[in-house]
Image 1 (spheres, chains in turn purple, brown):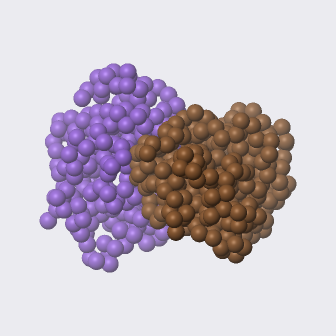
Image 2 (cartoon, protein in one colour):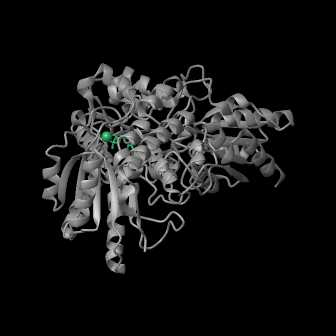
Image 3 (cartoon, chains in turn yellow, cyan):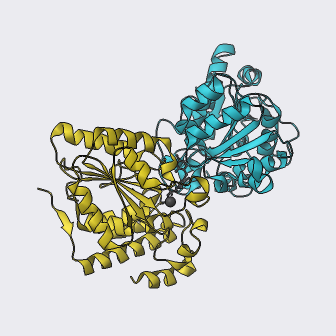
Amino acid sequence: MLEPRTEPRAQLEATARRIRRDIVTSTTRAGSGHPSTSLSMVEILTVLYFGGVLRYDPSEPHHPERDRFILSKGHGAPGLYAVLAEAGYFPTEDLSTLRQLGSALEGHPNMCRLPGVEASTGSLGQGLSMGIGHALAARLDGHSYRVYVMVGDGESEQGQVWEALMYAGNRGLGNLTLILDRNGYQQTAAVAEVQPLDPLQDKIEAFGWSARTIDGHSLDEVEAAFSWAQSVQEAPQAIIANTVKGKGVSLLEATPGKWHGKPIPPDEVEKALEEIGA
Amino acid sequence: MTLGLSHIELEDGQPTRLAFGEALADAGVNEAIVVLDGDVHNSTYTGLFKERYPERFFNVGIAESNLVGIAAGLAASGKVPVVSSFSIFLLANAFDQIRMSIAFPNQNVKLVGTHAGISIGEDGPSQMGIEDVALACALPGFTVIVPADGASTRAATAAMLEREGPTFLRCGRPAVPVIYEDVTDFHVGKANQLREGSDITIIANGVMVAMALDAAAALASEGVEARVLDMHTVKPIDTEAIERAANETGGIVVAEEHIAYGGLGATVALAAAERAPTRMAFVDIGDTYATSGKPQELLRQYGLTPEAIADQARHVLKA
Ligand SMILES: Cc1ncc(C[n+]2csc(CCOP(=O)(O)OP(=O)(O)O)c2C)c(N)n1
Ligand SMILES: [Mg+2]
């Protein structure tokens, strides 16, 4: 049986700090990448992988009963990689090879090269559909695994996201959980300027989902949201996580619209790591 | 052998996407031009147009199918829409919309794909347009242009906007070497001969043009005179230039930053096979996705180098 890794609270907080540190250092070292995108999902991924939710075994990355996590917003790869390293899929030292020739840690996740990556993503809008496929396969095979998919708020402008929402809702896929990382910004502007999403929760519920809106940086609220999701059987669940793009680094938090896809300049890293506390 | 490293360093000129963005902003005095974006105008440089003409600029969001459909409607109502995004997101994500809303009804929409090829570098394979030329060429009625440098991109942008009809213009991310000081002589569908030679012909476009020139210089030092053609327009292809190359030189090497299928190599081969079969060889990415790395490292890794072009030329001449 696969068991989730369940760390006590103090340890979870430390883990989250290490993940933030690794996001910052790996992207600055690479000289490119998306730290702000990655930082907004740290608490969610920390609880998912280390707070007693996801069932997985890094020594058996293709275990048929494993829970699946799909990072649909693939440019958040540095965050996913930091988590997978922390989980034991590969050595933490490998994070320093991010985006380098020969490294399996490509700019966007590549499931053919890196264990623990469940889907090759980077063209926005596609992860939720793949998640539905896994959820349907679980039903067909009589497996009890659950599927979690993380989608960006800008990404949710893609039509395919709403096609997937409609389908999963209509099929009542209770083994599927969507996490919408609502950090308020996309590449060129605030999401509210490009495509205001509200009333977002109402819309998703209208498509047949159970939905909740939470503070995506509160470990308490994230933990509660995942236990709620696991308790819902008859419908897919959406966790709308209000987050801050660049969370934990004041430089990025101050002007999130200006930092999409930009690493922290080397001379700002020390201060950033101090703020993170790792 | 080390050849013209400066060319592989991809540094001395302007990125073609920037040249496009500047030329588009300049063309904006024409009030029929409207520009559509899929949340990447700071990457494609259509932001330069947005600054000058915000009322004719539409950021549709991350929704390429919708983006392309809206452009088709604008065209049908008399506008000249220029749609720009990463090349592969535009063509692959919205292919049926391009087919049904633009190509089939022959709408005057200009698609400009930036971040083409593996020379985008670290962002990796999901962002690389390596099948984009094949997709665009597969659309009946489309004009397909792959300029080599800043000046020719400016000329191509102007030509594209002057002409009627659906067009795909392919631009890259990194700065590329200067090939043309100034292009007064850019004609859609007509190759530019950059070097005379009668032993062999190298046909290239995009970033491969600079490498073709380097390869030709290396071959010259061995006594082999290579003709170099900048085949910026893949469709309609310059069949006459190909026929002359086949008849007047000992064979053709085609070089492109694209998979082996459906792009410049395939198009040149088709024309040559029909008109004047000759010995040919191809320098391209083959049949694979790439990986992350620095642009120049990737070009080497996937065999897109002056050395590879020169080797293929020797191979053709030996055969
Ligand atoms: C289909 C597609 N179009 C465009 C892009 C370019 N792009 C990469 S990230 C991004 C913005 C994403 O915003 P959001 O989903 O809110 O993610 P965040 O970085 O805020 O977490 C865009 C437009 C892409 N990767 N895929
Ligand atoms: Mg966002």
